[in-house]
Image 1 (cartoon, rainbow, N blue to C red):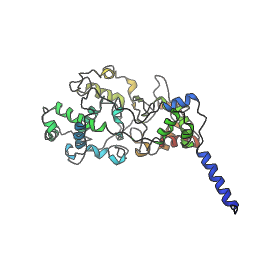
Image 2: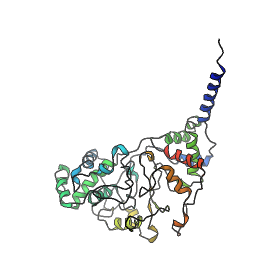
Image 3: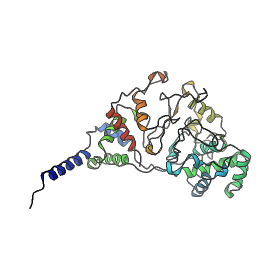
Image 4: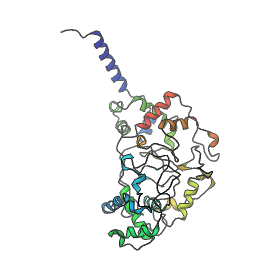
Length: 368
């Protein structure tokens, strides 16, 4: 048999070496493995909302889907929920801040996996998905808030026309919208395959996860301390934090974040304590114990991290164009901008260029 040319043999050896390098698993400690496994499994088990008896009702979801794409729900007849939550863009819009009937002040969050949240909106102004959906219908900068026209349009829906006009009809429409959104779940990712392999002790399968993402995962759960807030399968503990971002708005006003959100939530007749909750407030324990304090000023909801490749720009005002910008923010964090009271979690990470790239590789692996 004729011998392989030396150049071809060398190439095959190089390819083999790269394949081995790409199939290497870092020496994760038992504690690191447990921390990685805690970010799953995915997809999660379906959730229920006791304040919304039709949360998992297919008929309610079908009505909600129609309403979600209905332009006639807006004051101008030109804006629907889908105008800002585009299905082809992970139910986000790609803008720094939302543009509905008017110019918004905050970034449009994705609706994927929204059913698993505890609070809704960047400031937490709603304590249920249905209340958050209602807020969008009534907000002048989102869909216009023309109450009379909205009541007439909803009354033409057979399932809603039987509901008395007024707040009860609005709540019923919002609950249909919530039933539709509850079914929006993000797809599995490369990270999920890695996590599941770690959970069952299959190191050979785990080794197929890219090395850069493995190193980024180690930073995420370790020195970066990211998983303290971006916890669990949804990569968020569901609460609020000040991460040192400016909260000034054009024209010199400010966005108070959670401080204003709590005011809106606690005074709303559509919260879980109100008359439109289907369980008479039984699921409102967290809402009942909320207290609005000065420390909430400038805090915003900690978002989940799934689907990040599809949901740029980032942060509550869309101030970070890329994931590299997000990582750089935490690497060079201005600690003087953070609140002085309470336990401080965030510190500047001072990442090297290679470490920053590894963390970005990990964050990108959380997208399908």
